[in-house]
Image: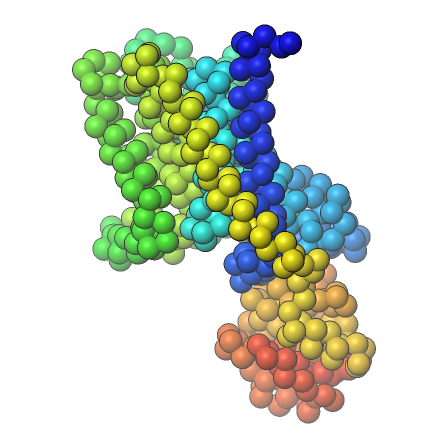
Length: 499
């Protein structure tokens, strides 16, 4: 019989893995039952990597022709999604496999980071608790947690942040520098969310305490600078024109308040826990920095707490003075780190006689959340679907097949979304209201001198049907498909007025 110590050593990680696995199974069933926010999942921005995979792998396209996003999300999103699509075989099933892989990576990195502070029993449970809670609130459509169901929405940058935090406290500074370079190349939000707060943390804690810090700081700084310079080599690299001004603080503060109000409306417990975490860290911050008084005594826990506070503060400070619009997905670290670091800080601050109770509490909470996620999906197994084929897309496909239409135009929000959901896989280029090609998250190969059809949206007033008819003549056929109308000019009859 296995000794009790060995059973405890291996049993706890197995239970943690089981909870994470079952929670991800619940998320997959929830997706296959089409309970997920379909407007968010099947969306022109969300379809970036699915469209890229279809073009490069299935249609032998060229990466050099692509206009990538300002955050191309090379790592880990590209290899994860390409692997998911290759294994799943189709777009619909690749999406849940991707978020399972992303969730598994989140759990693994969280476990590795927690292991630096907690013992072998508490670490996997803290990681499992954070991972399950992320996907639980994602199922409640609480942003930014819901972005963990998607690719290329800055979740990959957060995973690289977790990896960097763990490498920062190891000996392989060269590896930390490599990760920093790749992360800054992949998503420059990494510089704001990790690099700058990490450098500040090293200066405030390790340098003031006379501890080694120069090698880590050099690796982070040099790696991030190299990554930002390498971005210039990306084909058709896009940059958002960021501007800073104190004039917009009032409106930006109101927008930030609206985001928090939305979180409170959907998940009041979530916002309560976040406020409690940042309030506790703020109260402990002066003593932790001074090294005396009421403070976090465990060195690594102290560094992680100070880092999380600085990372969140940096994000808030930048968006308050930004002249650009911002979204809640820019705050993924601020929303997710407290779920992992909260148990770590609690453990480090508890008296030793109470520390053994924390794994029990984490196990109970994680198991309860897992069951709450899974049981409703098991009751609805008869609602599992093997495809998502909206009637408006079926209507479009019937029109395209009847008139042998292959190339078309649409506004940005319809072009990739309906093109990806179509079973005929037409090539649809995105155009503006001035009939200029919109070269944004797409390939140059989709644009042509002539087209066969146009999608005229009933929801977004972009393309003007009257203008197209005036320039190209009366279409050979028209079909109203609910959300949009299809206008057909077979054999490339749509060619005038396009730029």
